[in-house]
Length: 101
Image (cartoon, rainbow, N blue to C red; front, side, top):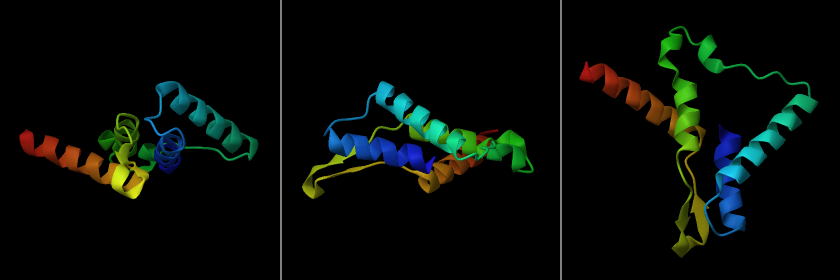
């Protein structure tokens, strides 16, 4: 999640425009190849959570993927939601859904 959020922000800063879906997919493929070359196994962390129906981390990745970096012109930098923010939003969505029932 952190890699995806940072990648979207950095590519947007370099190009000064929002990252395209193709650039996002390519950066994730490169990251996956790198992790694989190190022999690191990635596990879906939602499986490790006691109540895996929550899908907290899966929802967090969805939030990051569906969010575009924001051009923060006065400070000449781009802002992007990253892992902790997306986890908090995911938890808030879960709480909101439970309250709505």
